[in-house]
Amino acid sequence: AQTVTQSQPEMSVQEAETVTLSCTYDTSENNYYLFWYKQPPSRQMILVIRQEAYKQQNATENRFSVNFQKAAKSFSLKISDSQLGDTAMYFCAFMSLTGANSKLTFGKGITLSVRP
Amino acid sequence: NAGVTQTPKFRVLKTGQSMTLLCAQDMNHEYMYWYRQDPGMGLRLIHYSVGEGTTAKGEVPDGYNVSRLKKQNFLLGLESAAPSQTSVYFCASRPGGRTEAFFGQGTRLTVV
Image (cartoon, rainbow over all chains, first blue to last red):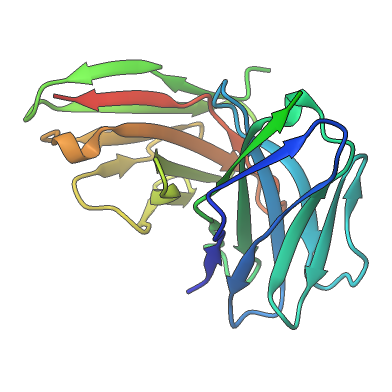
């Protein structure tokens, strides 16, 4: 079974600065996807970025980028030029593509506060 | 296109009462999931379904039952609610062969 670990419960960053959120995972699979989801106070779950394990190139979406280290099973999210609207809970998630019953497994999340 | 809709959005139950949460999706997705979200615990999978008429247990299935009689609907039942089931419940769906999951807006359930 796969596990996702987010060891930092909270982080804070000054507006316009850069912050990195950490995530590690454990799996015996070789073919999988990793995700970062954002949950603002509205409770809506928003997909921020997705990484395919077989791709060596790190995914990027505007101000959001990841540092994917497959051998170390590490998947961190970097937010550049932080904005007040980035204040939210962020979840790291894992999905195996093996078999028909692929499930989305989440970490415990990290609360990010962006200070004005 | 409504996406994933959860009914109700809020509910207060007394211990021992029963209720059913409805998740409806209009995207013809094969996979559907029920999660619960508790402070400091992230989202934990309760039950899931890989297609109409099929269900399977997730990480925390005790005290819950599910049914998927129609492809578009996934029902989560609490037969005898307990205070430990106070939580925010999320439904999600995704199409077969794709990885992006679509989430409902959540249901806040309080059991007193």
